[in-house]
Image (cartoon, rainbow, N blue to C red; front, top):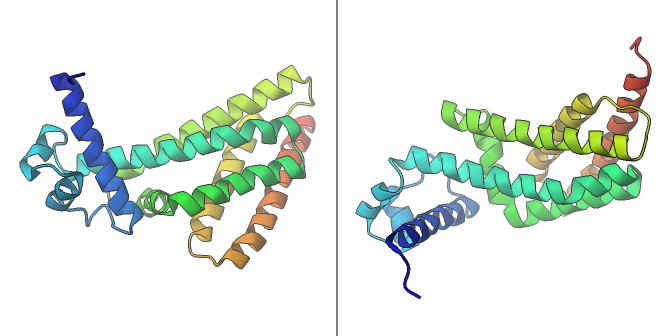
Length: 209
């Protein structure tokens, strides 16, 4: 089946994105991305780049979106069972999922970590927006489980914000850890997340705190 012009254009755009993501995964920085190298990696003429992105900065925003979306999808897979069970085993399973993400997508997470407080304002805004999406989704899931299972109230927003920041901080530090150190840090992360959920309930039930 012959592709339409619009389909061909989208296919080429995806090739550019995938090529750039591969370069990022191999250790390249956004600032170091070369238009010509990305085009070469994608197998297209350099002049074709501008048919899809105004400049490498525009490509960088898309790459950050892709990296954050991958992270959001992973967290979406694990968080519902973590919330539903709310015990050390379920939380540990979610932490293991995150470690598996690090093993496969270290370059993407490094990109998010590097640009979160980087010099590019547009990159920073994009990452902050994506982190808010993660917090919003987690808060909604916590609230849904509380209502459906008729559990004790919990400060959903505070728990979501704190859990997300703690998990993200772990990921940033774990990137350069040895396997042994990462396993030790993961056990501490399980305890931290457990404390966050327990503390969220205690805070919600004690209005004087």
